[in-house]
Length: 305
Image 1 (cartoon, helix red, strand yellow):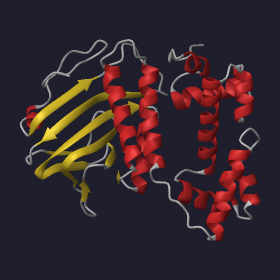
Image 2 (tube, rainbow, N blue to C red):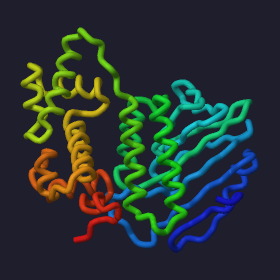
Image 3 (tube, rainbow, N blue to C red):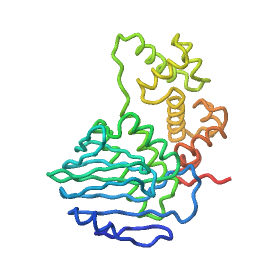
Image 4 (spheres, rainbow, N blue to C red):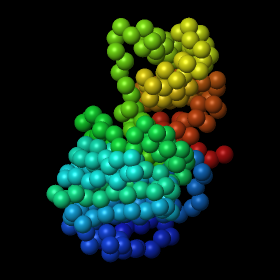
């Protein structure tokens, strides 16, 4: 990225970053991304990605924006998220996520602020942002997790500048970031708590029987709990509902089998707990942005019927 000029792909034209932003920054870099063709609604699309080093005068306040979501990571200095129920400090190592169709207000504080961000749309962008915000709009993941998010932002940044990188691959980067952020809310239960032990037993059972039929009512019966109570407790401990946890684990199992073996896709589906190859392909495209065969080959191109 060069100066204040954006780098674009597709049919868009270079734009200048708004003066009110650059005037309050010692560095303001932003790349825009415009797909060449209309994409399926399942894809997450990075609208623009940037890196700012702000002076204390930097401040943004919006009620709506023409994108769906924002992921912002603070790397130095400090910002402040202004909220009616109390401000939240944005310090190094924090991740802030926002539904951009709702009011948002943030600013730098006296010692300046450095952050990287990506605005995105499509897929279930609003739903993911809202789901995370219900826990907290700001989280402080582990250092390794924070570094992983930064690497994914760098992958997106490189991808929007490289016409060879597919839309599906960029979508996968955004989805992976959202999952990582959700996972950072996971709470480790205290040992010896019977309820927490029951959830941990359920987690172990899921891992050991991932290729078998697994549903929430059956898992609840094993834990001697009602379905509603089990689901709520599982979500509190793991950060996601049981059904979502099972799907994520199955996708991860399929990824490993695709990468490490030459098994046919139907067999990968069977060993990962999917009913057939079509069910695996459908969920794989939804979650990863590519079909299983493309993932295995490294082509990362979307499946076409």
